[in-house]
Length: 113
Image (spheres, rainbow, N blue to C red):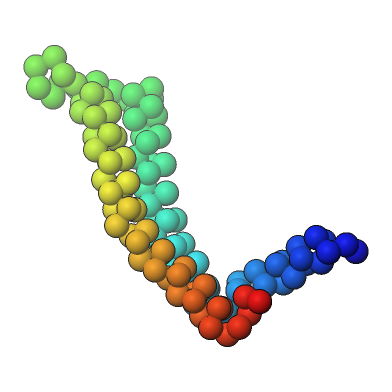
């Protein structure tokens, strides 16, 4: 095994040790608790428009003059996307702090060498 392969092996074991830390597990748990519900909501909301317009007449009803509910629902998808992005941007700063804590703890333990 040459020097480059040995270095890859060492890096791999370092990463495996990071994964086993409590702070890393906490980070992953918090991300899952946030991302899974957001993803499910997004997918349901996103696919509701084509399903409802294809298989029901509910969104074909007029809402305001010549504008029907399908147009309002489609516009709401843009709002929903911008809202989710904004929420994620705010939440990601907490994830970044937790990730920095994981790295800092690992370095303090002298494991980075």
